[in-house]
Image (cartoon, rainbow over all chains, first blue to last red):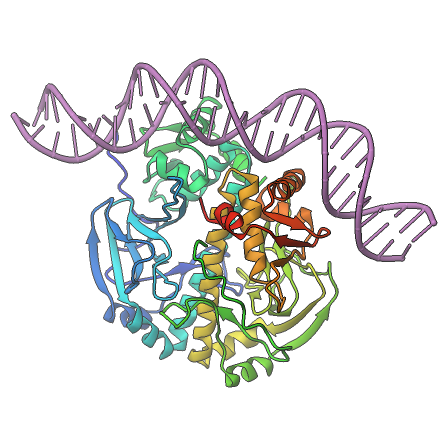
Length: 246
Length: 246
DNA sequence: CGTAGTATTGAAACGGATCAATATCTGTGG
DNA sequence: CCACAGATATTGATCCGTTTCAATACTACG
């Protein structure tokens, strides 16, 4: 069996400094996400950051606890979720390298954050970060762009789970995971760092529905699963058709 | 959310200047939304804003068109939505007074925006706004807080539509509409400015399901509908129980 | 006052949730 | 390195609620 997910970020040089990726508000060359921070800005952030190496499955903070820090992912995957009285555990977001999380509300974290894989993090004290941003409008603008980007991502998420069909929802996630898969090659391999249960939480489905949807994707020749943490695209057209917001 | 406090809005005096409302990152007195901008900041924004008065049902911009402006709602309700190939029209957000919208991606609007009611708007050219924010870190921090707030709202929306039960989803929306109802009195009246169809789009339900859910809310004595655009809370406990993220 | 969009109500069917049993994986300790 | 145990995932059967289709009622606007 292939070794389990070793998530390497695409075109991300080994990072000793925090970086941010997003699609800017205004038109740029490609239209895709770009690296936002300048060298100077990275150094500025680095100077107020602590680097952390956290093993998988670690709770970083819990909802409704005092928010002391804001985080930037250096490497690996983090999820944010809520624990509901019903036992449901909706996943609000998966955070990848160069994503930011931990922005609080009235001094409290809104969601719980947990690592999905081993993760490298940059941790910045909220108060210090606020001061830094208040003193550097250019740097702050990068944060504004990034948070705006995450808002749009949240809206795409909303649209995805608004769909009725489980297969389409799973296809959507697979495509988005593909963008975060380290691939030198164009082999069509997709890394799936999270569990089926996480996927279910993210897509608003039951675990069983996710499992069945994967099965159907496989039977219809769209993708072939390699273990539980990788998939191989066999019919790109078909995947795109399913994933494209119908 | 589950918090008991339905702190009544310190509602807006007729505004000639743009304002923003959000819950700041750090702890404040009440815990509820506060008015973010100082007088000076409002004036600064006003100086780069055009005031618009727009009739209901007006398209403000369409998805994937060139984004020239950012908007702040002065009065009234706006919705943002996407048109999907399937004919579905998911509503991403309802925007109320002191909300911001129109933040673009790579120079293009992501969603379509349409007025729900007659609306007063403040329109700011994106390029000018960016310059202004780049030159005033304190003002920009207010925008960062506001966009962060809208990100959290989007996540609450995600949780709401992740629910399986139509009644619960409608209850959630009713409670949130209550916070935006401009009534001095505590009569328990909720204004529902949008159509059932808009509600369906927002909640990821069919029009019929919304209608039936409203009916059930009424039959079970939770609320009484007054026409199609108002409801009266008859059992606050019951409404809260249904609405509280289960 | 009429007409077109909007909303309600009913009947049927689809699809996912749930319950239940089994299989597979992962990490731990022998 | 292997075996075991708990967690995770698959598969099957049934149930339930929403979607869909269809007909009717309502309401808002000209």
